[in-house]
View 1 (spheres, rainbow, N blue to C red):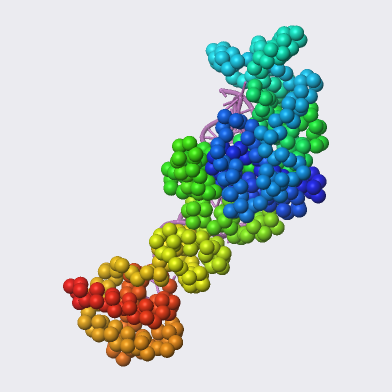
View 2: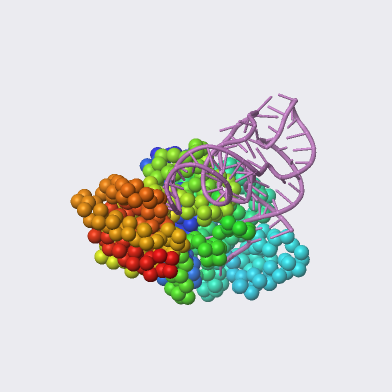
Length: 516
RNA sequence: GCCGCGUUGGUCAAGAGGUUAAGACGCCUCCCUUUCACGGAGGAAUCACGGGUUCGAGUCCCGUACGUGGUACCA
């Protein structure tokens, strides 16, 4: 392992839309690694493809990281001594390094048009070739500085003929490296193609930019998804010729997060199709206006979101599955990150959220619940009262959205009653009983659950009525349905006058039904 | 097609040659509770296949199958 005293890692997203949960996991692993070794976590925006620019996407990424509590130490927003942190603002830098590679004979100009490339692939296909790549097999048949004379090349360049710069990878060599997660990995350069380094618009491709910026930003460890593994030999080759392999960060290719059912990488489409979020936060596409759901808006707490992501590909080797961010920083280690992809399981994700809602004190998320209740039409909520309610019902809530169902009866008298639960239990005797019970309640000076319960039980035994039936009826009166914490606690929380009001209202309603 | 990576219950997974192959989610049964949850006790369910190596293989090697990623002037 490299020097762990100067750990610098980066998350390098392309701002083209919503932030996928796999992206957040990459952020998380970066963050955990950086914090574990007192290093720096950097956010670098890889916006080299101008055709894919999406309004608001970068700002959205910032918001997601902020919600998750994974703040970068250096970023376009926070600044830092290795800026700018937006690749579009570093355009000039790459040109220079591309030139160096050309001068060393490791890269070359290519003037092929899109049509030329299409024709090349068609020809290769017709020949029955295994490979349709622009590589050592075909480059000498193409229009580039290897096939043209020096003069021809410089004339084309002088006349501003559209061109790209390609890396030149010769066959017959092995490119090896040690992946921190997978161990030794070897590629044969026979199968590696001459990737474009500099596009015709002067912007670098990922392949050049990632190497140059990782070097200039002194990145020590580079984490990225497994989908990058096949292009690793290109990057290593560039490293070798530009900066030297000893300066290269150590690579760690993270396993993919897969669809729960069929095959393939988890995509936002799968979320839409199967009814769960894939993005961290809601994302609205500025062009189509299409909204894609996020974990935040689906009622997840960030602690749970991070926790479930961390466990999708890592565990600490014990039976513990619940980790706070600090605990993860402490326990995280790359050699316990898995090599194989994991199918995403939303049921388990919800379990993590439920665990965290139970674990967290009410004030940690009461503001979010406040807003959710407000949106459901319950307004002017007292904050202290809300926290009491949250503590009372949170073990029944899998997501923050469930608080609407589980808590609203504390704020508004039930409009409907579970008739089936009352059926067969309500009659004239019960009606009389509840009249008596209300009188008893009236006389309680301190309206506490123990006292309410005691009085109720006492009255039950005096009238030879089963306490259970009364509890059920009282619950329906106060709540409207068969749910919630202990009924006497509900009464206490509601307060005496509200309790009495609800009893009276419900009793009258029950009387109106034919089975009185 | 070619190249890379992977493969322990339905899912997440522990396991680093000798285990009755942990645990979690989900599912089922029961207890608690005249509610819903929480909690508790049980249950069903797994080493892709074939060859080696070895006294012994889920663990090491090879092959096959399957999965997955890449194969763009996208990242």
